[in-house]
Length: 159
Image (tube, rainbow, N blue to C red):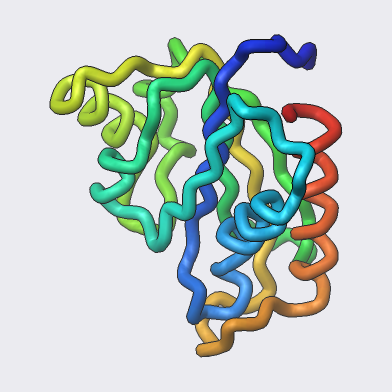
């Protein structure tokens, strides 16, 4: 992927800070916020536990990157990265998140109620969770390692 100099990017971290690995997306945002070399055109957003409130957090950007914990049955800490074809978002059944929304609905509401635009590029980055039911503000070891890898991936590839 080529970085376009004036491309605006929003990185949206999703998760609960109280449920162990579910906070992975939030920790990625937190660690990126500590990076002093972020371009001016990068917007970091803590989306909390998501839901319809995400509509109010979206910005008109060229590239939306959503980071969240996944539960697919894969090895804990596995990183998933998928750039979506924007034309196919409404037809996909795989864009529902555990936090009470699906991406197509959120983007549609953003456009129709707030007059926003759908980003030219949308990338989903997921980290396979080990535990999302235990109350803890600390992630499991495999997810902690993957959080750092995702931060590095975003820095190298997208910003």
